[in-house]
Length: 215
Image (cartoon, rainbow, N blue to C red; front, side):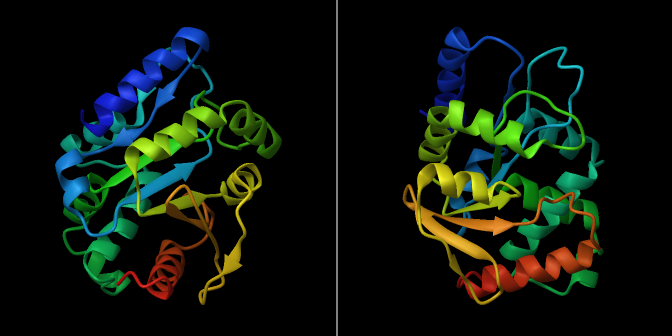
């Protein structure tokens, strides 16, 4: 069974006992994800969807953006980070050449999900995210087991994940906290929408991944 099919079964079973608004995660392109050298899962907080009118999919959202070649800023950032990793981290300025194609390649090689599966506002409430993560830990832990990433990039979620999983955190050479659990490496990183220059975030992502031996 494919990763996304297995996740679909997980989500359907979960929704039977946990009705309500739900945003699914998954792998954007399974063939590309399975063949890439470093499989990244971006574990974020929640989606920006205050109205919560209908359930939807992060994977479908990204596939729609790729089809239109128009990207929300958060996924533009994630796509360029991962494209940089795939290409041995070229200088930031070089990423701007054929930028949309680079974002597309980066996104096609990732998996993503949120700790909180219901929609929220643009400003996440830390305690609310933490409460959801504790209550639904079996769900997101099972997602990780199914996706089997080499590295989980925790976009503002590392302290919550560390507390729940109970692993020891150490500091890598870039200054980022890291920890091992569930046969993967968790990395404490800024949320892709963190209000700092994209080139600064890219440089820090580059330094962090290189310090972990990925380059």
